[in-house]
Image 1: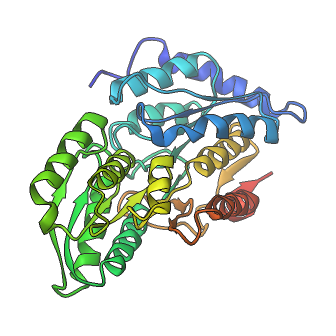
Image 2 (image 1 turned 180 degrees about the vertical axis):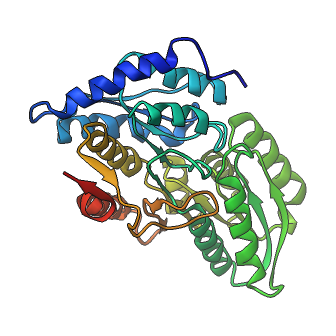
Length: 347
């Protein structure tokens, strides 16, 4: 982990803070430059690029850009943040590459009057991010496991294909699956949790090896990461056996086709587009000096943060394959439309 106290960085932030104050006195269209920055390359964040473009257009923001570190490493994310701050970006939506390690950089930004929000994954309190907007990952994994158990007829052996251990959401998802299984009072057994499957090579190797060795012992699988959802959907189709019930996450086309054809029971929708779109909208308001967050807003408290907002989730199955996108758009519109009054104090 590299030092964040590089020569010139605080000074550059000070200049930008003055610029941010000047922006607040500007005309109707915002002069702000907002960046949406994931922890590293991952297909989950692809909708952020369109969300950035749409937010820039819909809310009259000078620039909203999607910037991705070259690898999933904290030092690369912090270097990217520093570089963008020096280029005049004055509001950030961040998926933390490390929920604790990112906080020193966030604090430096905040001290210069540059706001940031955690999107899709939270920082660990105490933190200077304004709030965390993301999937209630515990609830999503819990509901997904309940849907899997129902598809299995309420009994049998399941496997959890978990995401990257560096992802702050993975631990919450593991606990949620374990809780849902425990509620069956022994009718369902979690025979294995396979972690670090949310990378292509690892997912291919681990999932196919698992099915090759144990498919007759497995009655159901739940994946709580994007890539294992796709890999497992492909593998179950290749096997041609619909006995094993599977619930994935996210709406990759391969997963949706597998649901349509009966190889997958369902998948948990998240709302990455809404996270990016709403995040850019709010960072623009805050960067302009127009709004601050309400301490007494109806925040959800999680193990990571006291200021969490659920960006929405739902189960996609054969019944709503054609309508779930409209449902997610309604969720996004509702959150964005009420955000100012619900979560912000604005001049």
